[in-house]
Length: 178
Image (cartoon, rainbow, N blue to C red):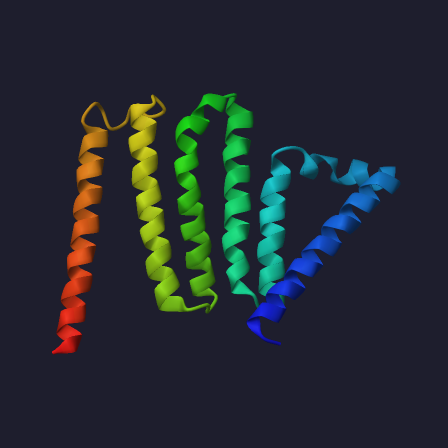
């Protein structure tokens, strides 16, 4: 089965399992009571993300690690907000979403899906996301670790990193052409 077929198979399995879950939840009170602690908001998003990753592993579709990381990561943000009552943190927490995409990309790469490319791109996204998180959290009052100069220093370091990686890439291309 080709990659597209495996992904379609995985999506079909996911939809069937979710539908069966909802059906059992509506028709069997004992099922609902047993799983109630695990299905409360927002813990259910973490479990859904884990389920997507497991289905991706079982069907041989490592690319499903990306949506699994996004769903679980957003579930983690909501879990943090629910536990701390810090709903205003969304003003800077959204910057973690590219990092979740990067994490999923790294996991997909580690599982054999275009390993070198995915590891490099995933790590880049995670670094950019972490810097953006620190900058926005510092500006918007979520973090006070970096002090008043932290966001500016982080932006300068991010700019140097982007500039350096671009120069390195062009230097490597020029070296291969000679």
